[in-house]
Image 1 (tube, one colour):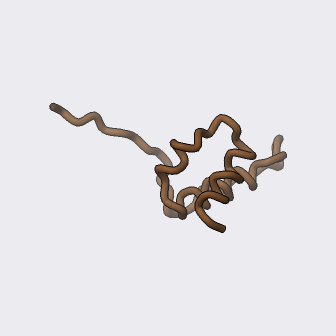
Image 2 (spheres, rainbow, N blue to C red):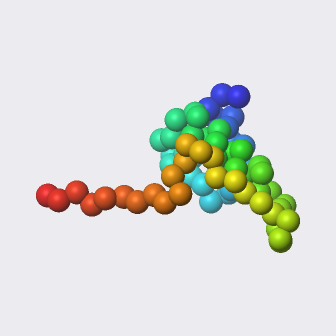
Length: 67
C-alpha cells in the first residue's frame, strides 16, 4: 500500500486525523498506526486485548530543550 493510501485508510477510521499531520510520519509508522486502528475497531469490554509491540516504548515523553 502506498503512503497516501495508508493515510486515506487512517482518515477513514479516524476522521480527526489531519492530512498534513499524518504526512509528516514515515510509511512504517503509518502502517503501524493503521494496524492498531484496525485491531481496536469494534473491540470493547473484558475480552478486548491489546499487546504493545516490542519496539514501542511503554512511556513516551518529550523533553523541553533549554534555550
